[in-house]
Amino acid sequence: QVQLVESGGGLVQAGGSLRLSCAASGRTFSRDTLGWFRQAPGKEREFVAAITWNIGRTFYADSVKGRCTISGDNAKNMVYLQMNNLKPDDSADYYCAADQLGRESRWYRIYAYWGQGTQVTVSS
Image (cartoon, rainbow, N blue to C red; front, side):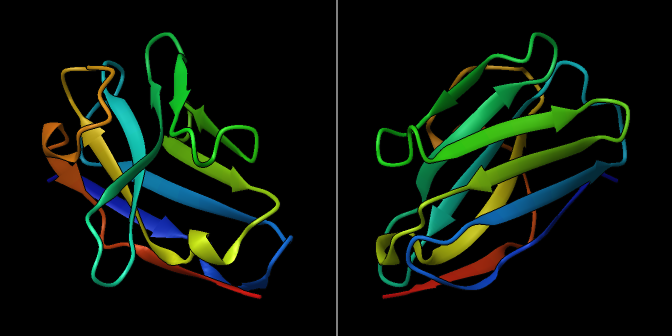
């Protein structure tokens, strides 16, 4: 059974940093794309960043480019999202997701596996 478990969310002041973690288990993820998405109340789920597990290619939403870094630890089946210079608009529930076909997609419907989410709140 595939499981994605996020952690690391919390309350932070604007300009601060957080590091989100995603622990993946249940099968091999060597060909997956692992992504981070976020959803604020009343808004659609939004792509944040993703990494292709086999070659480590990363891609980001324009809204976070330069402020966020996604990385992975293949040996531990962990994916991280380092977020710096956080803004109140970054407040949302953040979700880890996996696409087992390894596509480089920003469309959330491509991703079949999802974690339960971790909340990030940025105060002004």
